[in-house]
Amino acid sequence: MKKGKKLYEGKAKIIYATNEKNLVIQYFKDDATAFNNQKKTTIEGKGVLNNRISEHILSNLSQIGIKNHLVKRLNMREQVIKLVEIIPIEFIIRNVATGSITKRLGIEDGTVLKEPLIEYCYKDDKLGDPLVSEEHILAFDWASKEEIEKVKKMILRINDFMVGLFRGVGIKLIDFKLEFGRIKVDGKNEIILADEISPDTCRLWDSITDKKLDKDRFRKDLGDLIPAYTEVAKRLGILHEQTNVSAVNVTKLSSIKTKKRWKLQ
Image (tube, rainbow, N blue to C red; front, side, top):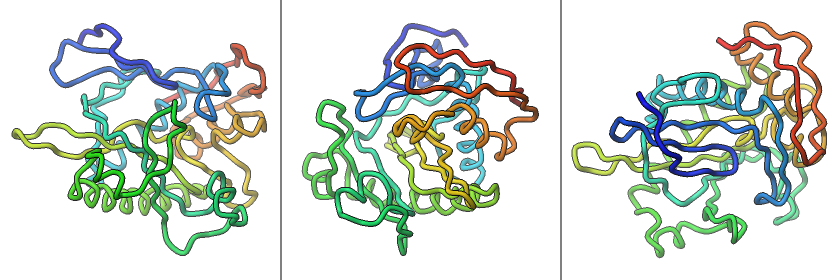
């Protein structure tokens, strides 16, 4: 497979063309952003960890029948993925109330929800990814009723699997973001899971201490983002060996160097 021209660059990843039809290469950047790119920096090693964690989770989801865009991991920073037509909606799944929903509705932070809550945000950084309803999605033809129903069923199954996966390693899955896209199968559209699943897109708290092991360490200037992501990878069994991973001061808005002394399988 030959890597071609850059097709798209987002906040955390770059997509490159290949010489194979309907396949592209996804490169994981070290950039960290928050609040619709208003806060940003570079944290060396973040892309490597997100690549490996996302591959691990998507591979496990494939084994339970959740079709997704992952084909294979190429190297420390790149994956081969299926080229999809992304539905312009971020699907937010909440198991515990925290973040924006607590401010929006005046709910106490950390409130455990009786059942998973699915929210929809229109993907547009300039608009601040506004919250929308199913009626908005249908009215503006972002997805059909059938597609929404299929996505919701997939979301609940993904959530059930991931809650169990993380609970088994002492982590609470608080909430997370998913994206879905369309591919052509026998001339018909098929909905599959796309994007990534990593500490960038999930809120992950230690089951005992509630220590944050996700991008909130950057959003809230808590520091030690790389050690937190490394801890997630270690608990998932991705890191075979880890010694003296340097702490990272993520409040600096410049390139940050860390000593990469972990071994990835």
